[in-house]
Amino acid sequence: MIGLVDCNNFYASCERVFDPRLEGRPVGVMSNNDGCVIARSNELKALGVEMGTPAFQLQPLVREGRIHLLSSNYELYGDMSARVREVLEEYSAGVEPYSIDEMFVRFDGFDRNSMLTLSRTLHRNVRKFTGIPVCVGVAPTRTLAKLANRAAKKRPEFGGVCVLEPNEVGTQRMLADTPLGDVWGVGRRLVERLALQGLHTAWDLRCADPRAIGQRYSVVLERTARELQGTPCFEMNDADDARQRIMTSRSFGRMTGDLNELRDAIRQHAQRGAEKLRHQGSLTCAVLVFLKSNRHRPDLPQYSPSTIVELPAPTNDSREILAAAQQALEHIYLRGYRFMKAGVMLLDLIDQPREQLSLLESEDDIARRERSQQLMATLDAMNQKMGRGTVRLGVARPDAAWQLRCAHRSARYTTNWQELKRLR
Amino acid sequence: MTVSAAQPSHASLARPHPAPEPCALPHPHITGRAGISGFPSPAEDYAGRTLDLNERLIKRPAATFFMTVAGDSMEGFGIYEGDTLVVDRSIDARPGHIVVALVEGEVVVKRYELIGQRPYLSSGNALYPPVAIFDLECQVWGVVRSVIHEYAV
Image 1 (cartoon, each protein chain N blue to C red):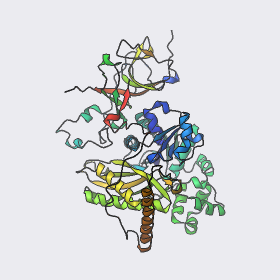
Image 2: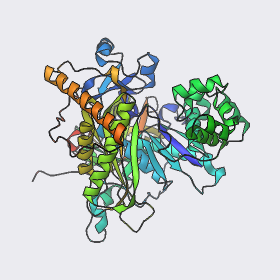
Image 3: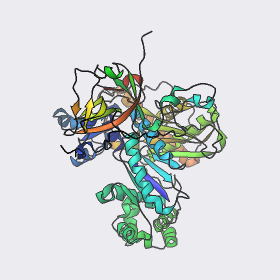
Image 4: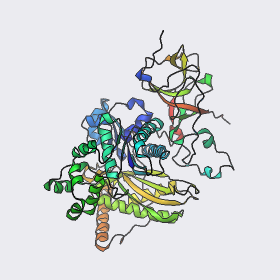
């Protein structure tokens, strides 16, 4: 069995842990330079505020005290995410962060009958220990675990926990209620094509012949169909939910502690991630870099750090993303540890057209942006024509300005001695 | 007077009983970090060679938070303005614990006590009387495991 633990309204929840006055209030978190809304509490969603809404449009509501808008506090979110992971690691050695607020937890070899009890324990302890509310979905495959998690989140009667057995009646009803667009890795265009064949729900796809699906559509969709039946086919990176985050990571052939090798790997991942980003027309707000030591070698010292570097403005420029990723790597690297895996995650993706140009932006900035777009387009075109990796970037500009406007950032309660919560 | 103070508003408090049973504190094997920056202490490698205060003060890194004391309300318990509190969220609060609590939207440090079988948050300063919490919106945020008092040198 495999579980998916998903933090509820993660950024807003992190803020609420230290500021109880935000509890039950509409809270939004803004992108770099306070451009647009990248995270919303349920209360803010209920007010009809969409993702990507420019912050200035919401100023009247802020002034009236009806909503709270905060600058993004990635140090806090990164640390809280690591804490959630750590609590989960008390229960399973197979915790795989899927994004900053979602983690797969492997329960290989666990007693199936105890899954519900265990899931409830995880649900309770993550909340109690870290203050972050989560939902837990458990099923035999990742695709089903995603759906179980969704049910745990949407249906109050589950109490935040859902364990899904593929052959139960309840499961059938649930799959029949799930439109295909809500299935992991099934994109909008595919939904339209499938609808023409009379396939509308997850249950329809589950009942289809996987081999026929594979021939007609793609191997990936064939695997999705098998996963819905309860046969595990996906590993972590196979089905990417690229609308929210892009992750590129790979295990090394052998463990390495060499900084140059790590730099190389991070460079490749960052570049590949930036390509994916441009391909889907998104911009990223922050870059997360992680390293993993080998948990199956308890004889070696363990160190699996991660950190987030916030970009000065949402971007899809490989050079900026690379520079941020390298900076993150230098920050977390420690000698004496050997790593098995390294990866780069691009967080808080927003659609390119929604990008809010900063009011302070000069003509120089605009010219630079245009040059950057041209350069990146050329880069992608060459790599597409002549094979991936034909043109690669070396070390990026070290002069990137990391000075950010973050007028409404909460304190870095867990990562800065000067900003600890003060109590009377 | 009957004691049925267990209202939902402070459901997170353990049911008070006069003599709390001794409770073993968890001592998990710490493979995590120092609790401040998300990274493990490099010193862990040298366990046995040197003493690490993190190891001594932080039993459960994922649930441990540092906070700063403001004001004089806890001086009677040896907690002074500017001190650093080591707060562990994984502990269930029992009477006698120093706790970080949320009281009507404010975050405070107080001692959780029973006075005449009723739950109170007490200050360590006669100027501030104990606050009865059985009819207040109140939640325990975490339990203070230790206080770090630094002298000017």
